[in-house]
Image (cartoon, rainbow, N blue to C red; front, top):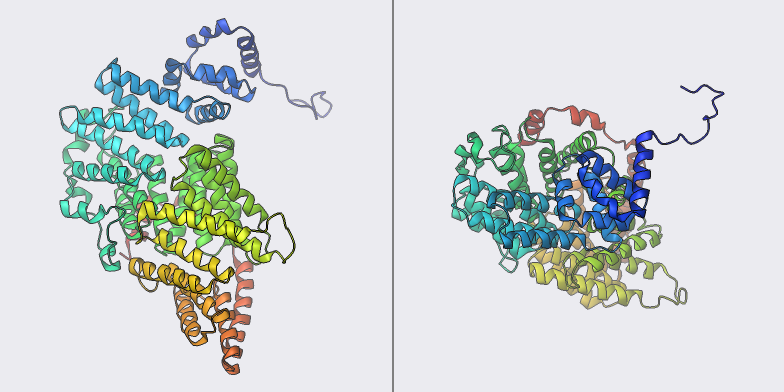
Length: 635
């Protein structure tokens, strides 16, 4: 060890010998292209180190040429210690200008067409490629690979072995199709998976509602629990080692339970993105019941994440907090400090914090997740775009009272640019990002004094165009009776109020309320939000103060029931009632709500002083059985 007088003290520590060798080899290969064949003789771990050094040294042309060699890419894909570094290399060369994702997909499809390998080998390879492309966010190519893989499975004799392989394809396909909003294709995959699991026809029909089907009532939606997984008639699968795909020799616990848990998790994710939150919650809880201490950690993390998100939208915040924090802890402990799986868990944590009114902490968590995703995927990935959109909305909520929306606007616009470069112009992924930008532009326009910032004179008109585009995309994907469509109606209602189109605003708000009440019931948070917006319209612009009073009181009742008396949204309802009773010259009642508003301010200050992050380690150490007992005790 160097002492205080060492000449190295204060200077950069030199690279070790291995790193110097890698650097010299990369420089040599850059100059002598004909010698690159020597790389094929290196062990997998050393080969991956060489390619990662190419990435670090910005030798992206040579790296792209190497990864475009099918034999090389397949070799790295099979090397279990390389996935994260391979993801970084893969995305970097794509950003540099290659079409590596489509090249890999075409190579696999060509192999299938030529029949160059056995069916089992093609299935195993297709599952690997589909997994990798899913992880990388290249969903369209992943779907092509996995569909071909599924077709090969179904073309074989339908033994237990090939049925299980088909279910493996279905699991990955649902992940792809949900993330990429391919809902008709996802419905087919979902139906196939249920048939293979042996679930009853009435259960499948209950859940498999097309985008234009009539939405169920709230009571019906609550009664859509799938049958118990033990009824899936997979008993022989878990005990028959020969029926396991690819990596045979796993224990029985890895077999049926883990696979069905993953499928149920994907069912939950599909219904979540389609805004059928009761079904999403039911499937995620079924998946959670199947976890055991022997379930692979990756699967455990994914199932717990799905449960946490479903609990957030079902307003079961106590359960949601335990789940999302546990997922973060597990991902941080088992995936490392800069892994996409940890970033995904952090995005869920940020979503939870945003919904429980911890806005500043939500922004901080979203920023951490975005930094991680950028370190892996660069700046032109759907993963990065999603994180930027989430951060933009959290910043919009955080700065709602300050009016400092320019950072939020920058993230929203970056998200839209990325998505536009990666998906067709009418893709649903654009709807949410456009909605966020429209909300931000509306507030900037309202905060800009007349005559100023003449370079942007039509912010409200631009906001309207974005909201209408988002509504149109939602209508194409979901139809009229969907929570997402209702949200877009509500956003247009608020915008028309800002544009002084009060009759149009009322129409939009009433549509939003009607749809939300039908789907979610009369006391849901989303209903309370829309009721509060309509109350504001009646109160401040249409002189319908008695109607506004009833709406404000209903909105307050929903907020108090769900969030308690410190909830941030209560401020606007209390202020609204002060204005209502002042206009009605009922000064005693106006004073009453003024007092409630003052008390609310004191409680908010107490919340900020008391608010501390729970000890994540405590939840990480909680045994899985104890977590399951805690969550199912009240069911």
